[in-house]
Amino acid sequence: MSKLIYNKTRSHGKNTNALSGAGVDTIKIKIPSGQKFTRLTLTMSSSHVGVATFNVISVPSLNATGNQEIKIMWTYGPFSKCSYKLKVYSDAVNAVGVKPTVLFGAQDWFNLAIGYIKQRKPFTLRVQGPDAEKLFSAINPIRTSLISRNIAINEVIVAMTVAICITVIAVSGLGVLGAVLLYAVNQGCTTKASYDFNGNLASGSAGQKMDFDFMNCGN
Image (tube, rainbow, N blue to C red):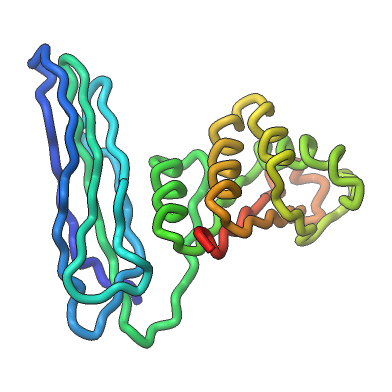
């Protein structure tokens, strides 16, 4: 079971100040004895206001031990405040890792997905319901080996390519998802999608899901 070893909020700027700002936070952490670094999450805090950004630019290697550093780049515009919460997790050195799942459309799903890719941590990005149906409809015409979406389908595996990612970017409402997929491919991730339809036609698109599994990033 993962252990939370760092949980703090950092803020820069004020929503009453007309000035802009930018910088990098260097956050020092110590992985407890017998533990190894496994993952982090970076999310917007409730005090984040206006035009402001934050982004992980340096993380410890997966399974790192001892003293480590994490670097977060931040910016804020006039009358804005950048405020983020960083959580860092570790696991026992001999623990078997559990692959996390990020749900497309959930709060901060984008930051979580990009963070895992940069950390080279395997994870699953899940798309459900009508969005899963739109994805399959877009990918199916260029993957002739796929079964018609009107037939019950379980675990149809699709190896992601640049061409497929660009196709996804063009789908209304899924451009950011396609950009994440393209980023993962360009980072060298082995990215495979599995489409699962529960076979209950009465449930319509709500019974569909598409999982994107990211592995071996940076290799």
